[in-house]
Length: 188
Image 1 (tube, rainbow, N blue to C red):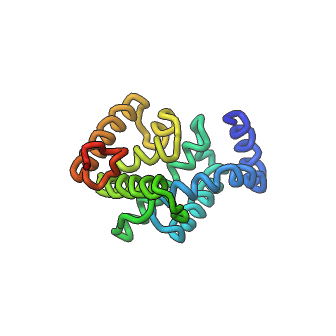
Image 2 (image 1 turned 45 degrees about the vertical axis):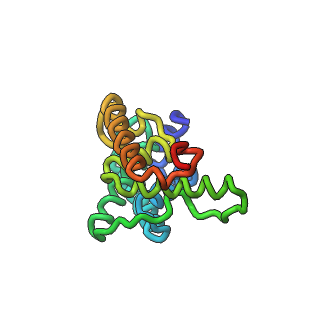
Image 3 (image 1 turned 120 degrees about the vertical axis):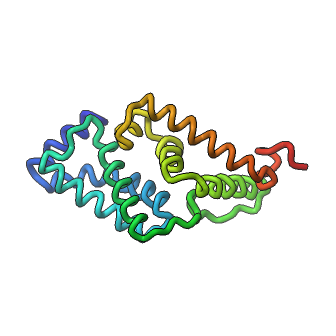
């Protein structure tokens, strides 16, 4: 897909209408990512729109020089989301894992409780820790792409991710009773 992205970028630099193929390829992924960061669908739609507007404007000005177009988009989206969150000065813990209808099975309830517990633990982390965990595990980006988004080396991603996961683990251990028995067998 990387070669195809490079071809599409070159086409978009010559003809802005060709940017539509890149938009179609990445709009859903960028929206889901920004929705997780913003924790508000309307704000995520705004950030997604601004992300693609900025990408289109900068792609024509030789703004994209990296190897991974997707990582460049994620970086724009991340920067825009952080900027808006700073301006709004809010980050309330809402649903990170999407709202789906609760199935009436015990497994579904336990999964939901586990997701909520993880969500609340993530919400208590520093934004930098939360961001690297979301990019790597929820967005399922490669370490190289995360490194490009965060403007650091892949080795630094591993170190930061290790530390962020340790902090997440500590948050989860602060309230072990909140986890279901399958996740925390020490709860009786």
